[in-house]
Amino acid sequence: MQDFRLGEWQVSPTQNSLTREGKTKQLEHTPMQLLLFLTQHPGDTLSKDLLLEHIWAGKVVTEEVLTVAISHVRKALGDSARTPRYIKTVPGKGYCLICTPEALKDATFVSAKPLWHVLAPIVLILALFWWFWPTSLSQTAAKQTPASAGQELYNQGRFLLFSQQENHLQRANALFEQALQQDPQLASALWGKAMVLIIQAEELPRQQGAPLRDQAIALLEQAELFSPDHAPVQLQLGWHYFTHQWNFQLARQKFERAIELAPHEPIHNFLYAQYLIAMGDNEAALKATRRYIDLAPQYYSVPVVAWIYNTARRPQDALVELEKIAALTTPDLNFHHSAIKTLENLGHDQRAFNHLLQSMQLAGFSDTQLTSVQQQFRQGELAAVYLWLIEQGIGDNLGHYSAPLGYARYAIKANDTEQAIHWLQKAVAQRQLEVLWLAVDPYYDPLRLHPQFHQILQQLKLDKIK
Image (cartoon, rainbow, N blue to C red; front, side, top):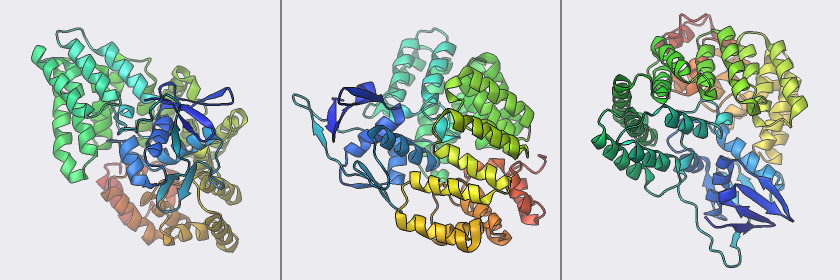
């Protein structure tokens, strides 16, 4: 795609950079693709669902990934959510590019296509790691794939799987098929076909996508038979058994096998840590997270360690971790979300509310909404604020996940047990990813003696976790 001008900036998509007055700023890959998609529709309000579908196609993610990416784009452009010159937030609807892109002299502006190339071979769990994973996993696949007659065909298919190409999924799948004709036992090509099916399944309603996902798992299990030492296959199986089948014992085996095969891949340790947190093994989760940070020190500022301390009922230690991060970098949306949870666990509701306000400001809420929230806090503190968010139908992730799970947590704070159970049941029915940590998160302690909460844990197969 050719460079173009956006306001006072020259945008270079191939370099992931913005240049103004001789000074260049780098923009991460995914925020750049989000900016490019917005430039395809200047003046149009694009819904959050549409943006998630195009930028994070085939992935189970919350709206937090979009909010974070928008924040990164605005920061790079020097834009403000409150007084926007480039990207306007339309509350309850989405985002609108209010600055028209212009072609440079002797250059042609080309509209962005659907952005498949951000896809990674796993379903993502925390949005803040999005920009790192695709590179890591594509490299892992390359290292773990044995040479074979179909290897070059597989490499071409994998390139399309990760690249911005029209009809790339179909083309990638055809190349994987050709690779298997050359070598029917090529595990990497089976993995590739499985990933195509998983991506397609995630675009459909859960029931409609289930047959595709079943086919994908069958291909991965076949690949495992042919090549039990293929780390990406082990990792994808582990994630599937954890998040879809809720077969936690088998998930552990696959995660540990992936780490054994590729111990220096940061993503292996990170995903294993998330699994360990859900299983209540906080010490092992902390060790895995430390390994992850050692292997990928650029992500030290991500508040994963604070999350582990929170689930371990050590909120003061979590606060210490957050203070370390705040001393090193400007707090972002994820930091504020973690601070809200930590400070509430410590009983510091005023400070938690301050971070909630900053979270809403970064998310682009209007001055009117911010004023209403402040009024609610003066009248009834956080309980009133959270009930107001439910009444207003604001389901964005403002620190307690998106709805319906966010509504359940709001109701807990408001001491409305029945409403909390109601929203929890909806979250489980929708298989909202974050329900997998219900058994260990102390925020749900007020519900622990409720029989329906125990039934929910049984449904999730988490009732034995302490």
